[in-house]
Length: 488
Image 1 (cartoon, rainbow, N blue to C red):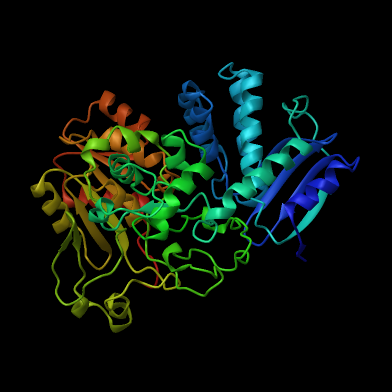
Image 2: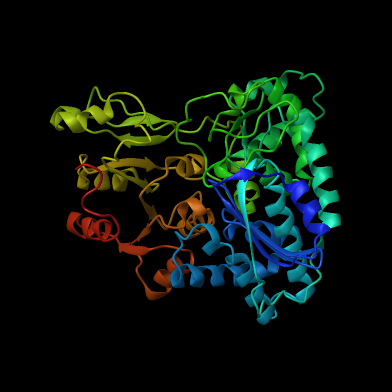
């Protein structure tokens, strides 16, 4: 049974207690693990951090050279263990990877300790808004590689948390999580003065270009600012709706909200911040498909000039059903089903509004990325519209945020494109946890062993050689997608 819980009183009590060991803190949405020895926290993690936190922390601390080894290790770990593990099973992943990086001399012990401190701060800070939980103590596991490290003194951690909590308070009526995602709906509004807005117009416009679905935390890291200070800089623009906020993407929508002095703790998930004024617990509807958390800084910088000035609203998954013809929105072409040919029970799922999150999925969503319109039309003709929904993209650089927002079941991608190499785009997508398990099939006229190996190292799932028949295409698709989904 969950009992009342507040992290600062808990840590105060723990600091004055001689009790050592591993403490598990469990709520309805997440779990935390803290290894405590002699008034120090050696390591802390929560079940929603997974390994994505390391990909952000390593370059932040200047250890970016360790990322290639880290990525190889994570790929091996995903193959060896069930990536769908949640809760306590997932808590050891970051420390396990760090231990291996130390063993391989990729990181020094001191560097690994520094990473542990950042992981601990992140995990314990996420406890701030938790109001009820179960707390259980267990003996400290033996043989931990970090068992002799200094850790973080609880007194110092308390001081850090209190400072962070105070820093968040001025913006907590609008910003309740560092994982919220800013966007600008109307770039023309950037030219209008905003009361108390301190960002020069060129800097604000450049920042909007960098957003593209990134979180407040990621944007702060990109511009090398503390996230609370960065949030305060954004706040006037959010307050006057020049910049708006999408809620955190799963799984980070399950973390407790930052506590505000006038606002209750989290009671519902995925609430659009622009609807929140004084009561976060209001029962708003869930938002449609939105941008995922983008973990790669490359996406935010290398493609800076190609992304353009306009940041569009995330693509909703609304389906027009009047005619069996593709719809075109911002360069993204969607093949629509012919509802006249669908059974009544199935046709009702395409009745003009986004499909309910509780409703059974009726078709596989496939994204096809190719600069050749002829190839896109050929693939379109091969796919059965009753089984598949197809979205085709000819300019992936301009549409990269939309690709992420679509949440496809499978991606078909040409290797040779003028705007970006398919292998590079595959790497960008695979660095986001949203695409960790999405099959990406590379298409190329050159199926040499070297090209196949390059695609595989980029994260591609399979390789399809041009020209290909309908049977060859369907064999590849059916390998990675079940024949029957939902109620079909």
